[in-house]
Figure 1: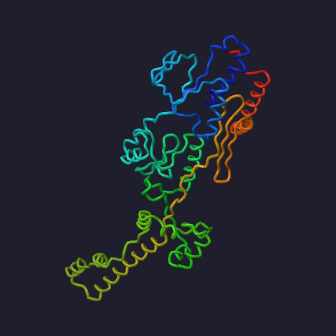
Figure 2: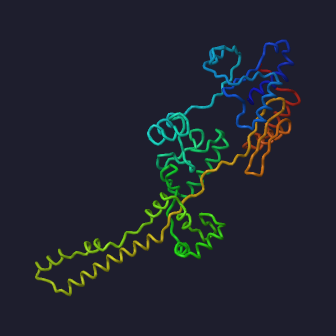
Figure 3: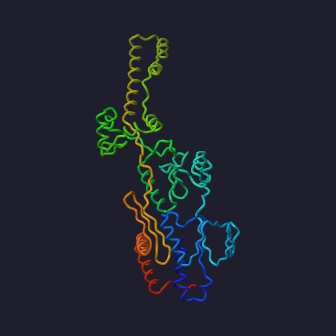
Length: 387
C-alpha cells in the first residue's frame, strides 16, 4: 500500500511534468486478497486509506487472488489476465525448512496447529513464555512462531520486543523446562533465607506479606521475596513440580535398618575369634548415628532451597502503527493500555510518520542524508535522470 501511494506520487508529481502525453497509458493497480487494505488499522482508517488512494487514481481491487505471473501478465484466480509493465510482488513469507523439520519432530505441534487453525509446519506454536510446545529448552520468536491464544501482528516491532524479553529471561539463568500451557513456568532453584522459611509456617507473616504486596500471588518486596503464596495458589502441576525439586529423602526406618545391618560384620568377627557384644552394639549405634546425620543434612539442604518461577509471560506492548498512503497523507494509530487511543489521518499523521522515520535511523549520518534528500526533492523534485 505504501509503495502504491509513493509510486502514484512519483507519477503525478514528477513524470507527468516530463512525459505528459504518456500519462494516459499509465495506471497503478493494487490487488488485495482480503476485503480491505491495511487490516492492522481501525476500520475508519482503512476506509480513509482506500479513499485517499482512489482519489489519487490508484485502482484498488479487493478479494482477488493472484495465481500466476508471466512475463507481461498477472493471472487472477477467476482467469482474468492483467497486462503490466512493472510488477511488485508482496506476498508475505514461507516457513524455513528448519521450522518444518522441528514441527514434524514434535507431536504436540500438530495438535497445537490444528487448534490454532494454521497449516501444520507453517509456524512453531509457543506458550506465553515463547517456549516451543512439546519441546524442552527450545525457544522461538518472530515470524516462525505463533503464541497460542494470542495472535500477534507479523511486524518487526513484535519480534524486537520478543528478543528483548528472551534476552532478559536467559540472562536470569532460569531453567526453561518443557513448553506448554500445562507445564510449569521457567524456574530456578535458589537458597531461601530465614524470613522466607518462616513465611511458609506463619499465618501472620503470610498475611503481612500479602498485604504489603497488594494481595498478589507472588511477593516481590525487596528482601521479602517469597514464593510460598504462589505455590499455594498455583495449579497442581506447578505445586508437584516445586515439591519434587525440593523434596528431601524421608527418614525411612526399614532403609535405616538395612543400611545398618552388621550381620556380615558379626560373621567376620566370629571367624577372626569373636567380638564382644559391647563392641557390636557400639558399631550398630555408630552406624545409626551416621545414617541419621546424613538424613538430617539432606533434609536441611532441601529445606534451604526453593523453586523460583518466572511468573512474567511475554506481553506485547503496541507502540503504534503508521502507513503512508500518498499525497503527503498518512495513517497513525497508537493504542497503549487504556489511557491512549490516538487515531490520526492526513497531513498531521504524515508529519508524525516522518518524525518517527527519522528517529528510527541508527546513525546521525543517515538522519542528515535523509533530511537533505527530502528537502532536495521538495525543492527540485525527485531525480528522474535514470528513467
